[in-house]
Image 1: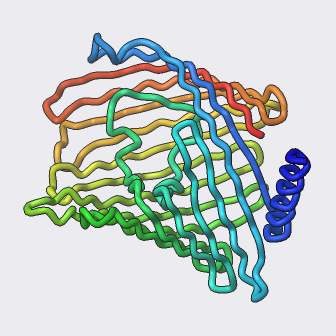
Image 2: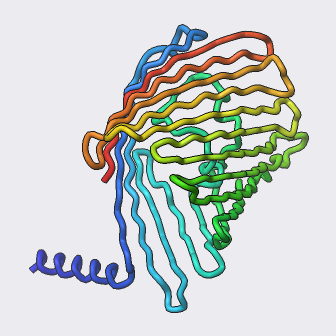
Length: 314
């Protein structure tokens, strides 16, 4: 009797979920990495190899209300806990997205397509602004002839005034044999509000991407400056991806960066990867990265890294 009662309860619960959710999607991915690296400036712990294994499961519930609004609730589980939690309310006005774990517009910046570049040096691609690990509200206007406009606000909490506000404008269009995309992102993080604190930053990302047949080429520029005037970083990236060989994807990028406040500072990074599709939903890739930095004091260091990745998606 107890087993029958439990089974009946489970069926009723499932039926309730099915009745209230017009569409339920469950997807997942697991990434296994073998990372081998050599930082010539550090002979201790920052030289060697290690294995990293990441996993992620995502749940998405979508329904349409009586007045035509589309509601989408998403939640995720990873090896470190819950993530990707958000609610999107969409209609003729556009969409309003309420995000619980800091995913914002900086994640959309066009910079690289290689599988898994790796460096122990900094700032590298971190020169452009990153999203705060904070609750986020994002508004997207309805698309207008290929133009998309978005804005977000990230609240850093009651203990600091270091909130982040960002704006994105993106234009996409089909052209003969392919497509073109242009993107601009502006991001600003406020000072914390503490006496004398000027830790706020201003960042921009600009990108132009052409996709023609099996080739994708992206040119982008990223900047990041701090309110103390201690640095004013800028980097330029050229990224190329080729998918013309069945089952293979080949990509590479080259980055050149510097600091307008410290002209001696210089950062260069290049990476290339090849990804092979073993079967539907299963890929293997190898990525090689070379990075070199010259500090404002003229000290040079470089590192080389190789990453092997096995990825399965479900």
